[in-house]
Image (cartoon, rainbow, N blue to C red; front, side, top):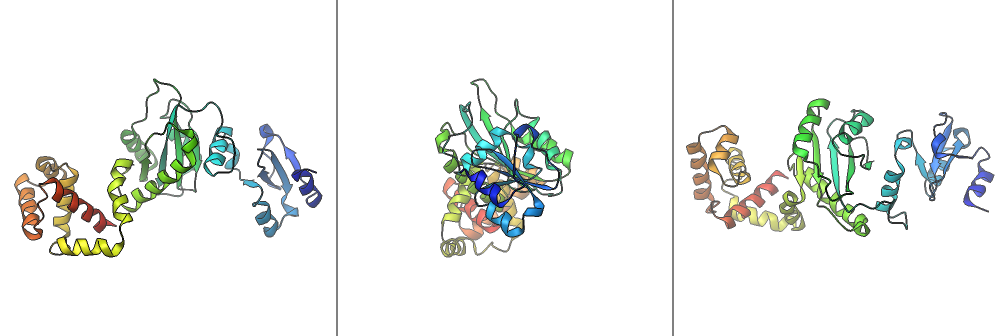
Length: 299
């Protein structure tokens, strides 16, 4: 006796549903089995405990889930480790995970998803984590397929939806077999990029300094910052100036322009920081130590 037949003995209203006709009335609760079969059970036969038990062996389907594609479901099951199969064919030549977070949870997900998909040459698998966060899997299927530049994209989206959006772009992977572990690593970097407010579009390279900071015990981070930067810790204007200076590649002209101040005023603050801390941020070693401290101070 199959699992479906066993369940039907407990829930007589259970029916199997074709994928093409998955839309049912609100009287039914939909579930998806491990082999992608969809079943429906009358809600009058289910209490909260029943639903909780069924979720252990089946995947509940909401109206929003009904709109997911077979490829998205394949990716989802693969990344969660629920499938022995790699993923749906054809396999991408390479892929990367593009995580995103919307500051406004009330934005219509379907409208946002359609707007985001319009920037890609083909429909990409998109998996929602909740009402604000999700990940789009940028699949490269052909040698001449161009990758997306996200900085102009995010400017358009934030203007259209009147909300702040944060993207994290993982590195590309050419090994689909490593998908689940690569996904968990990219997800960790995504959350680190949000905790440290690394711009509207963060990349793996930009997250690396924060990875080093978070791997160090808090007591050791405090000892380092106290030893080197106790004399400037409370001077927020000075610290902001130095951070912009370092993020501008130590280019005083560019940093002064970004801060809307005269170049001589910026140079004065840089010299003041060096004098008070003894850390020469004009040299690479002093610059990297200071930048790590500033990232820690922002956490």
